[in-house]
Length: 234
Image (cartoon, rainbow, N blue to C red; front, side):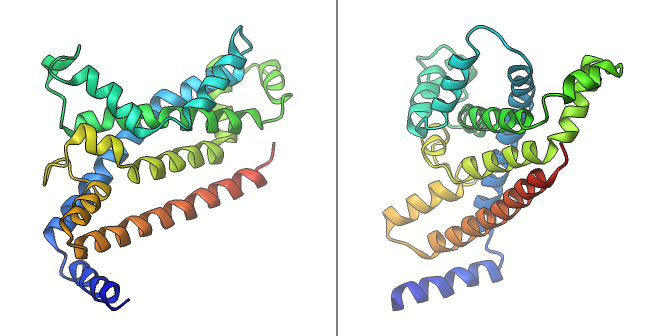
């Protein structure tokens, strides 16, 4: 207990002194996760609107696949993307391996199903009479999409927040595709694993504090959006 207390105090000192390595690692995590979440949202939200708003052959199978992908292990994604971007892979000439771009690609694959399924759920909660009523009043497809987006905005925002929380805490993709290079691809989770292997716990504890603080703030936003969505008129 005394060892942990000493490590905790030393970790707090790193924050107080604005330790450069600590801030650098946190910055990489935030940037990579934000980029991945933004790209995934731009891909997943339109796809979710299409799936939720139409009946087509294979829709139920597609939803089953999306729900299955929610449990896809990060190491599987890492292996697949690694095989594609390594020197022997199809995209090997692009020299993407062990870069932040590779990490973003892997994280996008991880959270596209998350945003898609949660957005479908948010859009599906809107009263079924809403669409035909809007079309009767003269709304075009674009206008209808914007109105639905406004009505389901809290649920969609909650989906994006949940996805961000998923990627910022993952370790498999970042380790396998980023390589844990100091100052470039080292994230909070990969740095914590490295410090543990080295038997140096002060930086690991500091990063753990930062990660838990971020996760706490993300969960506050998530529950706020869920609450707003539950009370939104339909």
